[in-house]
Amino acid sequence: MAKNGEGTLSWLRHRNRERVLGVLRERGRISQADIARITGLSRTTVHTLVSELKDSGVLHEVEAGVPGSRGGRPAVLLMLRDSSLAVVGIDFGHSHVGVAVADIGHNVLAERRCDLDVSHHAEKALDTATRMVGEVLAEAQVERKSVIGAGIGIPGPVDRVQGTVGSATILPGWLGLRIGSEMQDRLAMPVEIENDANLGALAELTWGAGRECSNFAYVKVATGIGAGLVIGGKLLRGASGTAGEIGHTTLDEAGALCYCGNRGCLETVASGPAIIELVGLINGEVPTLSRIVELAVAGELRCHRAIADAGHEIGVAIAGLCNLINPERVVVGGLLSRTGEVLLHPMRESIRRHAVQAAAETLEVVPAVFVERAELLGSLALALQSSSDRMATANGGARP
Image 1: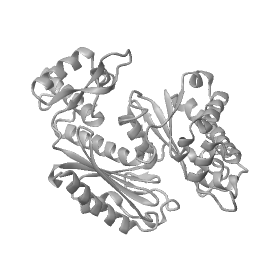
Image 2: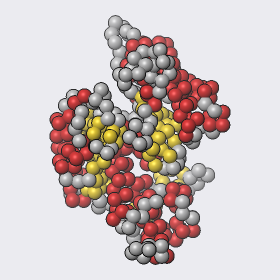
Image 3: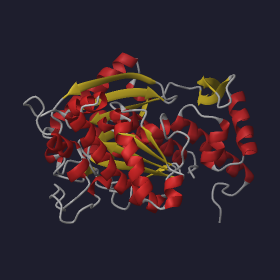
Image 4: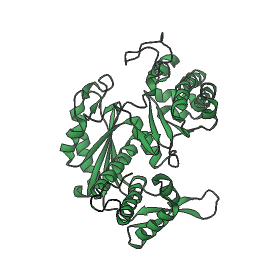
């Protein structure tokens, strides 16, 4: 038997209204056509609901800031009018803490970054992040009672059920620490945690190269290699939260030992440390990965070849991914994406050679829009998405 009017026309109308509002909270500025695509509602239904929301002052139109696909007048997008509510994003990198605050119109109001050995000093990192949240809220003149949630990113697998780090080898100082509950107690607000590759995917989905895609893979190539998978417009996390661990795809069973305990993982031949070892000394010194990227872009032969070889190996792993989930696009982020075609060209060639032809022919491989800020922006996107889910549940479980 239906409860609270469930199944009636008024209930369905309310449910559809909340679905439209949920998309606006998650995406910030968006067109009516994209709302229809994401929600699965008809364009007529979306047009009617949007007209009502505009008339009631809940949302308004803004210009996209760039010409439409056919040129001429800028495209018109929709966004929520009430920007009094806000979310917080926290990015724990291996050697830094980043914090930002944004309103629900997806405008970043303030952000800060602090260098810190996060991997080995978990409690200090949590304390530092808590202090920085207070600082960005003060800078943005946002009252804490207006903050509806926080998103937190860490550079490794996340056990979302326990709220803990899923690998002691990546973040040795965080083993057993319940990050979500610890930060929720410190901040006095709802908290969600996620790994860095998934946050990169959320950043690109919300603001970047995945904005118009329902199915894409975000591949972060830096010190490590990981992927965030977006299927049907949502993150694919897997049964235990380890979906997207592409860096531990086995390429050679007799290859070098990986820190995960297996042999011949992708990370043993294409990650930052592997590239540094392959390049060797430059002017008598071991170069940083950033320096190798700079030299590769400038045309230095060893650095160029090392990154191109990495691109080839990563392409082999991505080809397997394409055969499994058939994404529309692969968005490549992380520090190595700054080398552009040095990395991307051999990656495309490798995918074309190893993937099923139908999957390879329709695939786009593009650089990410965000590099340094990807995880921080992704943590804001996570907070916006989670807050939207909670609001929808409070309003009758309107999320699809």
